Amino acid sequence: MKASYYMKTRGNYKSVGIVGLPNIGKSTLFNALTSSQAAMAANFPFCTIDPNVGKVFVPDERLDLISNMLKTKSKVGTQLEFTDIAGLVKGASEGEGLGNKFLGNIRQVSLIVHLIRCFEDKDITHVTADLNPIGDIETIETELILSDLQSLEKVLQDHSKKKSTPEVQLRHDLSRRVAKALEAGIPSRDVEIDEKEWPVFQSLHLLTSKPTIYVCNVSESDALTGNKFTDQVKEYSKKKQIEIDPVVISAKIESELANMESDEMKKEFLDAYGLTNNGLSKVINGARKLLGLQSFYTASEVECRAWTIPVGTKARQAAAVIHSDFEKSFIKADTIAYQDFIDANGDEKTCRDKGKQRSEGPNYIVQDGDVILFKVSC
Ligand SMILES: Nc1nc2c(ncn2[C@@H]2O[C@H](COP(=O)(O)OP(=O)(O)OP(=O)(O)O)[C@@H](O)[C@H]2O)c(=O)[nH]1
Ligand SMILES: [Mg+2]
Image: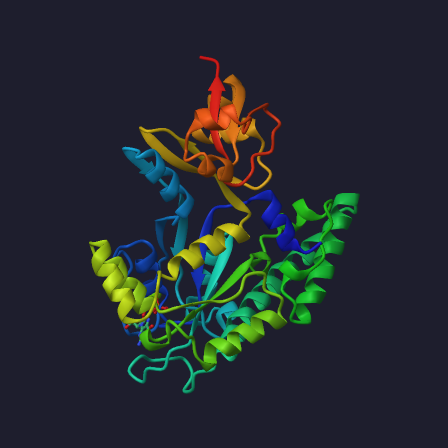
């Protein structure tokens, strides 16, 4: 199985890193995502040196609907952490442009949002004279591959000094196999890894093991339709079997939207570009999907809340996300599937009467969208 399969099922989630060449709009996108001006965005390469980290609210239409139905006083969504990383350049793995430091920042994140410049603007400096999105993608991916090859070389050198045990042998063989794939230009996330090898693979902390989403930054006028550059990226992504289709956004539109206070203003602004909603939701929810995350809900007239859990989480562990004590004091999870809850207009009693509320035990595998009332002992 491919390495990213395990990434999905094990739900190893920390932070999403925005990665790309210098001066292409990474900090502009970060500011839009975090609705802030926390990151300095300016027209010169390497404007960002130290990473900016921020929490981003996950747009959640289901939570909005549940909360509207129940007319709740308070609504609390889940969050996802994003990190705005400095621009990488060719030669980064050799230390070019503070490359090793920046590559180290990528090591800390669980998923890569690879931002690609797909807008033409002579006033905004680019690393190459002509715009070449595929060349740009390959520049970044080559640096990640080279950096991983360096890491594996060290692992293999260390092994040659160690006494041979089955564990050392497994690590050695796996490292050799992954290095061979990297030498052929295949990122380690596309290498077949079996269950036994998985913990060792994870411990290698390879940059190319991270699932990736391509995000095309286009000019305002191309936000609705995309352009010839985004078509190239889409084709490339298909060829490389990237799990999530590239997202086309205008970081400029998104950052302006994020600064608007009222919903009416936002709607008017989006209408002017023929857009119906912002593109950030696709980036955020795409990242969550690739990280193998899902939500369950707690819903009452006082508060509606979404909670994040990895796919496959059992009811007892889901309860612990609300409060760590709930893991021990868990009695049962009164559960209604999302669609049943909506069909009953958010009325728990109707669900109960129709037999749509199930009393689940600790080993129940929570489903995406479940509306749950946990019973715990005090
Ligand atoms: N024309 C145009 N300019 C943009 C767009 N997105 C960002 N910019 C401009 O490009 C410049 C660089 O933007 P940043 O967000 O600082 O880019 P960055 O990728 O974070 O740059 P580094 O931190 O230096 O790697 C700024 O002047 C932005 O206003 C866009 O979609 N269109
Ligand atoms: Mg920046």
